[in-house]
Structures are given as structure tokens and as C-alpha cells.
Length: 294
Image: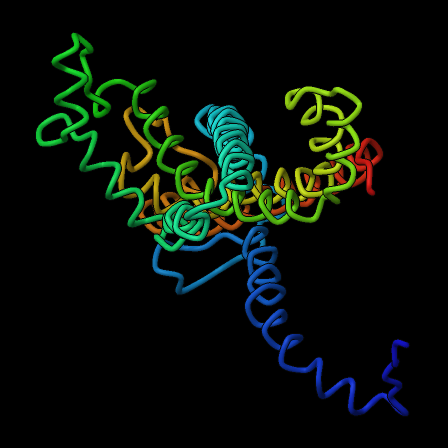
């Protein structure tokens, strides 16, 4: 019989919630509030004086073709990273779930990339594909491919997508594996007795039961591509060549820190925050209707 804990009064629960509330306010709501305030202000490059400019920063943003181009770059980048990280993660989880001998070893090896920081992952892939010293770049050149991501925007985009997705595969693998192990074995055994092939069992039983996990990971991977890939972009391409890999989060940093446009940078961060909130709300509002919970 389950026992429920009942608190008499509000003081003790408030004390228990206070540390998490403090972290949320200090590191989330306070910076977001500062960004909103700065987005409607203008000032000098040294931050010594500010003035209220209203929506001028936002109007300047959407009149800038480079900013509109960053939208397209970010959309392509985030979708590609999500697909490229989810598909191998599911494949590795299905394969690892079938392993009997040495399962712990394989699972540990597959989880190791997630322990690497995005910036370090970017450096690793940069050294592998560097046109001058990279081992993979040398192999590509030997096969007749003119590889130089410093000059080719498509190659640069492909490289940062691979670098960002590679690290996230381990995260997706962990959740997919947990979802697979939670599926009752009786369902799979009954379908096998009925003559269902392994492929049919996967698409008609396993994959639908993984819908909640897949739905959660789609949201997490999209948010990851929007925010947590700054280190990859900065260390591999720095937004180049010719802004071919300048996603929104990198443009926020570049315009604010390098360009010293604090008001414009704050406006960009507000727009980026609104996009992520809207994307998450749309996913929960419409996509969740098609998610089957067992």
C-alpha cells in the first residue's frame, strides 16, 4: 500500500522548493528579463549610457537580410541535427537491446560521446576534417573530393551538422534504450507466435510504443540545436564561410560581443527565445495528439 506524505502548512514545502526556485530565477528569469529590457534600449558601444528606443532594434533586425538568412540557416541546421541524431540513436538502441554478451561494454562505449562538451567535440571534428592536417580530409582528397570547408559553405554546414549530431546520438541512445527495455516482453513474444517478422514487430509494436520517448527527444534535440551548439560553430567555422553556418545563437554572440551592438543582440535573444517557446508550444499542442501512450 502506498503512503502519501502530507505537509501541514506551506512553510516547509516552500523551504524545500526554495533552492530550485532560486536557481530558476537567477539563471533563467533574471537574464530573460534583462534581455527584454535591453532589447528596447539603445546605447553607446561602451555601455555608459542608454536610451529607450522602443521597437527600433526589432525593426532593424528584420530589415537586415543577413538576419533573415540566419533564420533559414538555423532551420536547416536544427532539422538536420535532430534527424541525424535521432535515427542512429534509435538504431544503436535496437541493436544494443538485442546484445546478450558484453551488453554493458557496448552501452558504455556508445554513451561516452555525451560526456564530451560541445566545444571539445567541435575541436575534435575540426582536426579530423582540417584541409591541411586532418586525417579524414586527406582521405577525402585522395578519393578525388576537393575538401576545404574554409571556402565551401556546404561542406562547412555538413561538418558542423555531423559534429553537433555525433555528440547527441549518445543522449538519444540512452532514452531509446530505456524505452525499449520498458516494453513488455509478452507483447513481442505474442506477435512472434502469430508469425510477425522482426521488421513488422518493430513498426507495428515497438515504434508506436516508443512514441512518447520519440516525442520528448524531438523537442530536446531541437532545443539543443538552437542553443547548445554554439561551441561547435565557434570552434569549427566561426559562422563562415560567408555566414554559411551563422545560426541565430551564434549571431547573438557575434553582434553583441564582437559588433558591440548590445541592443540588437538583446533583441535577437528575445526573438530566439520566442521561437523556441512557440516551437515547443506547437509541438505539445498539435504533435502530442498523435502520440500514443501505452
